[in-house]
Length: 200
Image (cartoon, rainbow, N blue to C red; front, side, top):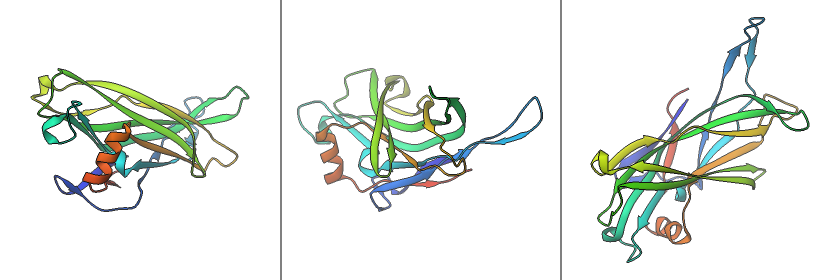
């Protein structure tokens, strides 16, 4: 399935709550030995905290548009779920594959050919973060005339399947990894981002 960011106009987004809530599709597989249809376990909910959908990197001389090295934004999240391996105690796991679509644009203070964009996937249960993984991908923006639409590699997250394969009480929060300064900038300058399901 595909999740896309929606816009009213280039610099403003639909207003929403604290999170944009997304859901992934489960994969249906066929066992080669018996032609048995295997339905993957339920997927977790996916959330993009609105304030983490954009990253403005500054040059250290100021926090306005003239001192912006680059602007990265999450434009979509793609993924699926399937039967995963077993853990050390031989309990079944659900493997979630998550990939981000990211737009990257150079700012007036850009001084590098390649830019590093950090992002996170946090595992939540009952509203509490129980684990968080941070990834950093490098993008060549200069060769794309200062603007790039790209995709991150698929990241694998294994979650306990539990006793009921048709229900999953975990949530994955996905966003760009920000400094306190960048987070404050987003909260004071940007409208919340909104995401909606556009495919299966």
